Length: 369
Image (cartoon, rainbow, N blue to C red):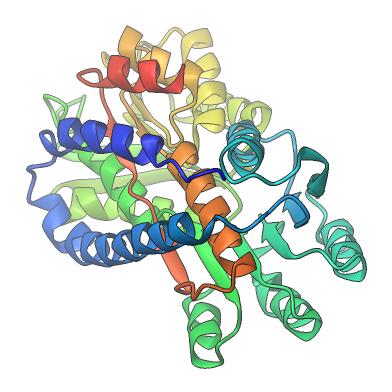
């Protein structure tokens, strides 16, 4: 019998203490208080579900099949996520390696839908899905419901209405992720915590560019909105010089920021990126233009990729936000196992983000390594 382990969640709790020490600004009181309450409630529910699975996991999982589809394999964050997901399902929950099948959606919803249909035809016991398009969740959920196969959605959150439908209709579906409003708020707070609150040229206005992921993705929407809301809620005047989609891609972001620096030059005081891959691309262009982060420009991302955290430690990025792939992957696996064991699962299960600054970057880096 294999018991569930929550080591990652315990480890992250210590990092949360470090993060909370830097979270005293009034900016988050209106933007994050309700979010934190909701996240705490769903986090508590997730932990309760994990305990239920722990009690029941004496059952043999070795003949159960898990079908996993990731929106695309060449996403840095989702590579970390799926690696931990596979490891945890096999090493901790007792699924056989050959029964945990992970497929590349190739950033093509039609391709991914075909994969899901194949999983259904082959009668998999549970599916874990990182959708190419979160808007396809209702259709996919119906397919799985008709086949009697429970589904765990990860990373890309369906709409609130869709999640409520699962609850109202007792559909065996759940979402595991982080509330992107929290990550956006943390990005804004990182700028507020600089010596000049992002106003490098002292003109009373923070002029910024925003490099988005996919604008149809709720994480991109919330990170874009709430990073700026944290500033305006604190009474900071802002000016958007440019907002452009970078599709979570490093090379695209590098080109966007290169062009923006050419067009706007020293007017740009802050570069917000919806993820770290794009922040790394932005950094390449910033350095190529002879600008220096934390001196004449600020740069923040989300995900806490190892390279990005090292850059924060070295002063090459202002900050990032730890999108805790370890706890998310483990929670998703727990929910999948709970479904297989016939346990009740809440429709939403949230994991906290962790703000990463120079003060706690080494601790986060040690955790990632």
